[in-house]
Image (cartoon, rainbow, N blue to C red):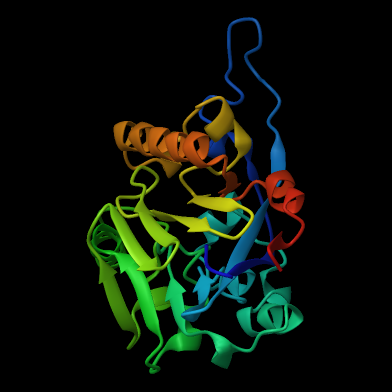
Length: 267
């Protein structure tokens, strides 16, 4: 195994109804026509993978002005990233001991606004930005038309960026660092399998927002699910890889799961 490490960056908190992330979490019934809703906190995170071949940033988080009108009001009302202003990418990298100039490549799990909001930091540079072909197409389709998903903002990614398009379902980025196509949440979500000297880490990303999506196989709420069938197939791939490699699985927004890894691996 290569002598790589993974450093997790805490990029703040989003408040949202659990019904968005766990389908049917609070359902009305004849006996309980007005169920209580759980308004929970979710983590936004990035990762820095220090690999012998490159220092790779995984995702870029929300735009720091998300709460100042940058995010459309309906989206911010549903997914309130209330401390985004305190978590600009440059400052959070600095707190972890990195500079923007240290980043050799960026992997975008997908281009939703809570993941792509820091891409402006790499505009007009030669830093490669890896994104899956299906995600790239769907993001522009969504942001530039009235179709697709409202969770894409053209202002997040419509820059002069050095895009590197990933085409296959499984792609080796570097030794022991494999990108996985995990469609479901969006057409082009990517995760990763990273083999470290003492651990294998599976980044599931927004294939699983929280543990209930993974452990109980309850899908995301309909508003966050592009394809139920693809989501289930992707989940089985992640679970099979976890079984084969006894891997740690990092979810997209589960705060407890994120904190359980104590800042990363092999640091």
